[in-house]
Image (cartoon, rainbow, N blue to C red):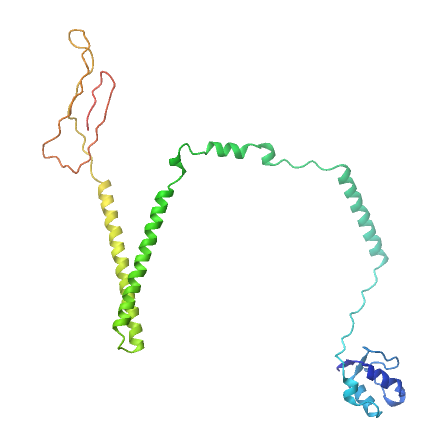
Length: 269
């Protein structure tokens, strides 16, 4: 059953009639003995009220009425045991707060309190000794610049081929021009990637072959640094190492090992 709220027209109409004789009430209908604005009234009661008098019409009685929403039930009263328990808990909490105020707990010791200079010491130990240790910003910038330029080159090539194929196929139908442009762009992209991949592979192979070249060590000439036969110290003369002219592979790595210890035999490798 839908309940509506009483309006001023309903209240005035109920004040002019005898509610007990005019509107018989059922057990489920709200009471109309004390009418007031906002009190509940059923739709059937409004119909009976409209038929029992000629002063107010049905639309006048319903003008401004809304669906009645019952107010929430009041909260149950708190029991004496609950009130006593809450009072006891509040007293205990106040006592603990007062105890913490007059006797504050000892603060916990943190790592920073034990080692206050740890951050400064770590920074001093790991401080770079030269500007070269700061990083490879120049190398990174050059690599990024090369990658960006390569990407722009790819995009320009693909866009140029697509525009050219679109112009060349202007007499074709629209689907054919679209497929032609897309196919040409995809082929150019594949070709660009293949060429770049081949270039990277060749550079890697050249570097690998350069690192894997064998080393051949050979003593070219030796001399002794010390006193001569007559007891006088000979003058140290620089010895020029002659260049090898035999059939040794010139692609082999050659290293010169210098030794300045007197009485030893330095070797040139």
